[in-house]
Amino acid sequence: MRNRVTSLEALEQVVQLTAEERAAWEPASQRFRMAITPYYVQLMDATDPDCPIRRQAIPTLAELTVSPGEMRDPLDEEGHLIAPALTHRYPDRALLYTTHNCAMYCRFCTRKRKVSDPTSATSHSDIKNALETIRQTPAIQDVIISGGDALSLSTERLGEILRALNDIPHVTVARIGTRNLVTLPQRVDPELCVMLRAMQTRNLAVYLMTHFNHVRECTEDAWSACDAISDTGTPIQNQMVLLRSVNDSTEAVIALNRQLLRMRVKPYYILQADLTEGIGHFRTPLETGLSIMEGLRGHVSGLAVPQFVVDLPGGAGKVPLVPEYRQKTEGDGTLFRNYQGRSVMYPGCFEAGA
Image (tube, rainbow, N blue to C red):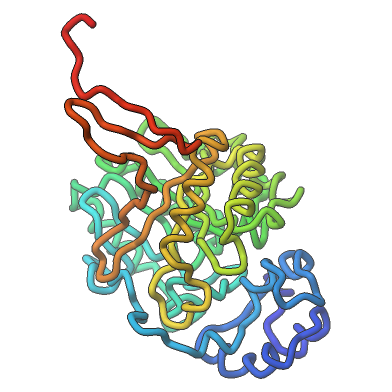
């Protein structure tokens, strides 16, 4: 973390910047800070501005454009606060904002309004009040510990939060939101693993949610970090953000998801990029995600097929999108199209005992 690339001068030492990237540096960094770990820098192609790793980390002029419909807080997380740092958008789930820090500041971040901004830092009293609010809200059974990056917290601090949740009878699931497995896998050290193993109790199931977006992020270091986490009994699930010119093809998603399964990471979501200001250049048409889903279903193991979801603006929540396989209803049956394009009739009713 101390050796992150955070200045134009340092970046030019390791990457051959284009004139556009150089011009974007100051105005884009003023809107959303840049920081890249040395580990993630070495995954980049230093000479190719279209490198899928590089595109996720280095500012471009496109970030300065606010497209129609984009918002500072597209999911209305602030409007659904029920306590400082605690967003309650779904009946049984709540998001606990624990830190503004990340190992790397991803250019497609949905919380640009808060992440990397020290003024949005969460105090100990904020977290204490949020935990008390959770205690007084029996409907909340699942808490997402997020930020920023939850693994930017010290292991001691993260353990304190998990132990507090473990002591709340109606909270049965805690999810740790982190991209450190991708951008700083060295964060997964023995101390963290000991704490996670201790927190897998009959009272609280702890999951780790991460963001691998491209197969080139699935390095030996990342694999070792995932192994260490999995060996604690902590399941890992991946939420891939669908990004133009990064992973917006069936081939790219298949390569990523097959490798993730080898790493004991379950592909969970393909997320349509949110309506956050300045990320319109990353956003793909909805048809792109649907086409990818059609290319996955039936062609790869169901374990490698996540849900494609759109998180609706205004805090309306996630909705899944799937290709249309039902063609028409005929009599008491329904005609379906399978993954090969073949039409198959499925009967609509059965006689008892048949």
